[in-house]
Length: 340
Image (cartoon, rainbow, N blue to C red; front, side, top):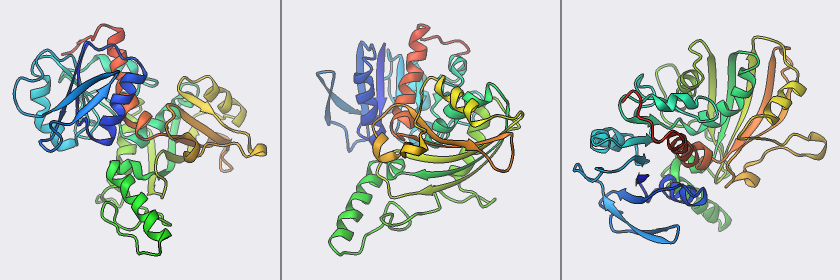
């Protein structure tokens, strides 16, 4: 495999490099791309130094098999043809192509077969909040089809990238020293606060982040009639998103049955011992690969409904790790290009 990382200097790009090294992804060559500002920066991967090249509309992607892109939607749209022109498969972490009917939206634990049908040479990485939710939901959906999902998310500063995390850290220092915290990345100071807005509002009163969960969940799970209603909240946590999820299914399900399904699901770890105060928390689980599930209980409104709490690292499973797992799927079938 000859691979490339576009946006190598960003938070997700840096995590991609770490994940590739940690999982010993078998690449023959690695090429790093970035903006003119980051060009020339050097990073070490698996003991070898790599210099970031400026991303340009030329033939630099000739010979590349897989390109991981994490430089924003506008960059992905602008350079898609440049990246895929010579046969590279673009695994894109932006929202640019997620709802394109000719672009698969893939979570390997849920819809791995979709990865092998990519007529545009692009595979989209879903939104971070959607990824962790569908990994858990799929465990239940395979046994009893899900009719509706209500979810409230508690999203860490990492969802806004490295600058979001830096702003929260600076605000923490400011408050500790008696100064007024400054807000630039977020609409309001995040320290000692909750902001019930992630992304911009749409005409129906929901934010784009909330609508992503609606549309992406349906596409990934091949469930066009599935109802998803979300409220997304930014919280003063540095890294790892949390979600409270209420699921209504076709058939009744007990918490014990749900717990057993979660226990048998790859990529899910159950932490659910209320008597010993054992449940997932972002402080403990930042840097972990899995989706952690706890507080599994019957919804008091319906015997067909289960509610649970889940936590996952937004930069890992919510972004970089999921992208590398998609590449591993392609590698398992010799970089199949069916449909291209």
